[in-house]
Length: 167
Image 1 (cartoon, rainbow, N blue to C red):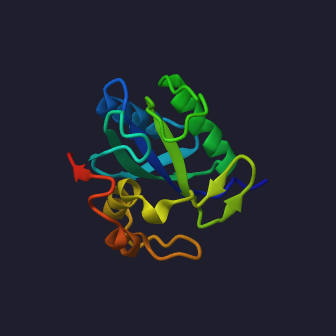
Image 2 (tube, rainbow, N blue to C red):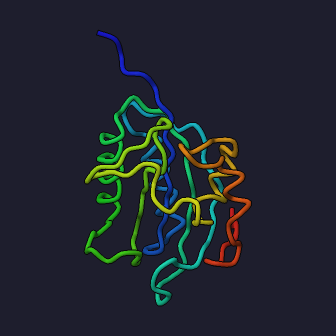
């Protein structure tokens, strides 16, 4: 029996509750400790206004690159466990405030679309709070049937939602 191959994965991190920068830092440490995963690179931190309802605090966002021997669905389960450990409550509100949001942005150059997981993550091309930090760590990564991260980042608005690099 051969060991599973190592595959690249990219995870978006966001928080706007309970000391968001600390939530993001704790999430990065939890990702670093995942079994069968190696955290390869992490972006700086970005503060952005919320994409959804504006009556909530700003988000702190980052992106990390991993290599993993886990399947995409296995990695998704691990991400959801980290969210739950850090107090994430899934109440069905879309784009609402949260202690932690971990999105599997891309996995091994694959396209997956089933009831549990869509990869690449929908809406990446319009999300400056994903593309700007991602461009820092792998600007030449090309999403399936899309442009590379740098090209997409160069096309997004820097004012909607408002965004700034803070660390």
